[in-house]
Image (cartoon, rainbow, N blue to C red; front, side, top):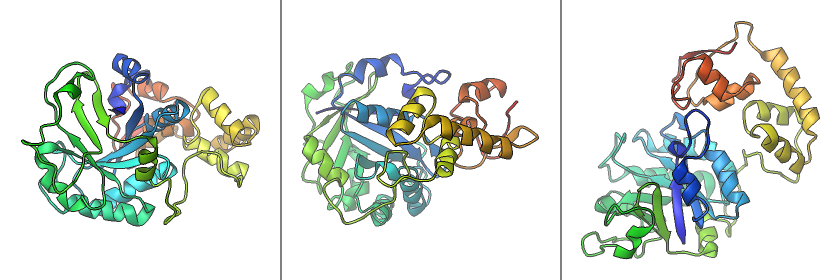
Length: 320
């Protein structure tokens, strides 16, 4: 199975459009894994759009958390709380790398993270780790599938797979098998998965029932929620924008015009007179824009933000 893993840098920072490499490799990929969160203060603003596109395209999908090396239980909770709606639909994964990771080298961090995530979701996340550092997550091998990174060369695209994984140089014990091998990142992260769709679903937990997490995604549910609740979710950015929002509301059984009227009423009642907003931890520009009935591009331009993905707690944004 050909797999790509993607993050916000596969999108143009100003328009949000896919990059050329994303447009090239997405159609070829048989499955997609998408960065969702990092640490306890970052959510990929393009995660849900890419996740829903993968779902629409019929591609098995996953979502991952990039460890920053803080409190592992807190990071697991942050990951879970921002991806509840994907649980048992896609494979969750912990991305354990040295970059921006204050706990790199700690052989207990991954274990504490996966234990907490499993407590919350009933699902064991996959572990992504470089081949030379497998020992740092070895105590997760009995429960978590292995996603290992090893680049035999730096050739373009899918070419590296033909060289094979060097098990003599980089043994995978105590894991017995590699589930996904990332073997290239030029010009996008390319992987091969040694699984089929049925195995993907089993790792995602779709075939088990030992936990019943609540859902926070705006996917249709049998029991409809109040229009006021849906309007609040629209303001929070959970239903997308434009025609995508209209389609998803209709699919869930709501009247988009009625919901929009409630959104307008809520915004009119709650919009601060000063027309500024102070960024809080966990905020992203898209959600802030949705709250005020504008777009993240407009806010970025108004506040001189070269990269709309980079905002920080305490920053005061001009709305008008």
